[in-house]
Image (cartoon, rainbow, N blue to C red; front, side, top):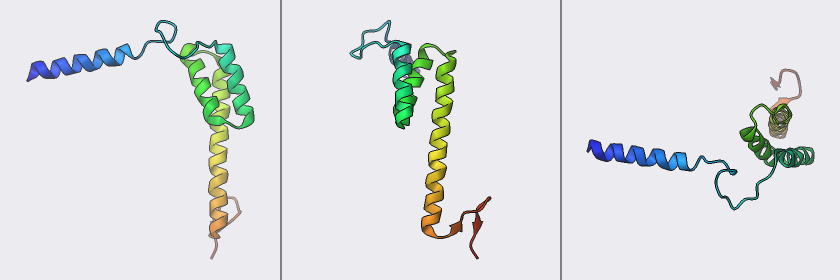
Length: 110
């Protein structure tokens, strides 16, 4: 029984490690893109409001170069824009329900 558990753990570890290769060392169907191309595309997506695509590209840049200041900056902008969008949606939902009126902080109507 212990042998089977060890075997499964080792097999799982090897599968996980083999999947962690970078595109440069492994063969991939995806075209290799430079960090500059990814940054350009991420900026364009951010400006168009496509925050999910921008975040995906920025995370790819940071995976290759964790100290890229520009990618960290734009990732913070994306996170800020997503939270602002979420807060705006919550505010609109409250106003549509008619349970709150706009004050700072929001107060319940009595």
